[in-house]
Image (tube, rainbow, N blue to C red; front, side, top):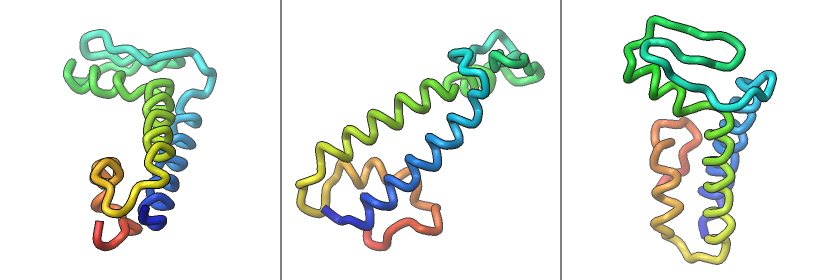
Length: 105
């Protein structure tokens, strides 16, 4: 397996997990949307288009952390794969614009 890609993915997951943890200041639970308002547990913000409110609520910190853990399990299952590994390339694809994206992926 290409170690540069694994290190790159691990770094992105670490960054996202850190950000998610910092967004959940009191550990109140999942964010939710109510029409044009997003309930962030600590404060309600209104003025969103209802579709955007749902999208924002879908990315609450608890869900993001569960998704990151799932991606880490995928990485672990592919530890012995030979390159190229299509699953890891798929995991990396959302980050193609990142300045540290490994060449040749």
